Image (cartoon, rainbow, N blue to C red; front, side, top):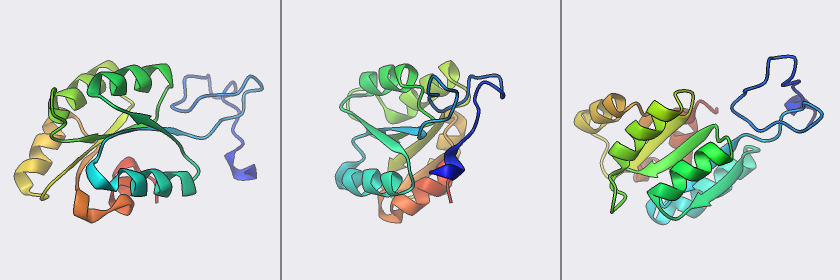
Length: 141
């Protein structure tokens, strides 16, 4: 974990990861809303990459947890039931511009990708693309 040492105080604080009292960065946080049957695989993949994964049951939980836990990224289903994932994405990005939101849906089409960009998402990923594609959309290689 030596590569994860970063002095948040020297950088002026306010980073997208939570900071320990001594100023060192904790693991980045991902809020994961039900992304279909692939949620467990997404969570396992991000944990292997050193992220803390915070599950959320509803879109309202996503917004609350993303702000309260100072998440670096959110994964939302495009069709969340109740409130649309597209609308939730737009609200999240408007309230937290540095937050990277990835929408997960069915087939990846040019229309879906344009709508995701319009909503402010970091990307639109098909469930079939897998966790690697979500990590790339968040900016993790």
